[in-house]
Length: 383
Ligand SMILES: *Cc1c(COP(=O)(O)O)cnc(C)c1O
Image: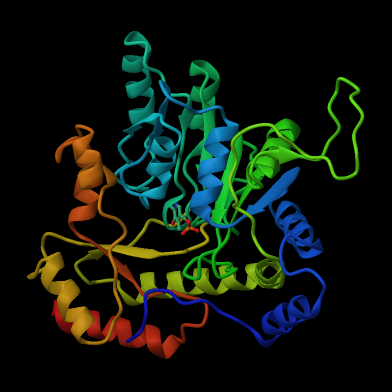
């Protein structure tokens, strides 16, 4: 089976983890700070805070943006469930903005229209989570402009998009947002096994995020001048154990050195797919006009003119050893969200996207021959 995604672990990645294992620290030692510096340097953000997963990163980011009961978080229906669940984890309410039919990311016009209605009902969101689906940045300039107009915070879900750029800004620089969140799960571009991070340019938010990842305590002296002993720490707010280990950070730092190589190969494979798939009843993702996609995923859409539907094509591909996937089932149609009142039909563009989407294999170590096999299998099935 050719998988849809697979990590790339080099010999030097392995050596770095072994060095960490032999060091005095195996969690929250110096390698975590080194990894964070590598992330911040790459993204061009002032701070990076590494945590135990992308989901944990979204959770603490929402807390640091003061999201709580009575507040609204908006995201898109076509995403991994964690982009929406972080709102529920904070006790907030969640709503969705439909996607743009061509870019498949948050539609700024749909957002503007929804904000206008929400303003009248006094139900404006506190946090909006645009998702850089498949590694392609959302159109951040109009979203950022709306944030200024309506006063919400922007939390970028950049879990697919490490190494991507938008115009001349690097995703994660937070040039158009308050914070950006990454995941280092093995199917993502850079892996630490499990892991995540938040980037931000906000000093106060960064300090709070560091505190939240370690139970909410601080070792800083109280401001009232009370004597502070070397063993003192003070619990300030409810936090979590969302630490990343030094072993993971060692792997992450080593992987970051290979990121540009990862993105370059993925772009090469994406260009090759576009060329090889031309003439088939499939829509390939539109190329990025300004900036570059990280190509975490390569999603194609089966045209109505194809002689078989998505279900049949998916089954035939799997049977032929092609590990296709579907990203994603619209979040608002999941049972948990139906219980909250959402219904099929609520977000027509998202549902149309989902109806005929298939994710083709794409990963750093994929050979041209493997890609040729995916294409020839597709040609045979769609002939
Ligand atoms: C992977 C992913 C997450 C969650 O990251 P984990 O590290 O698996 O917790 C969140 N959002 C999106 C869009 C993702 O793809």
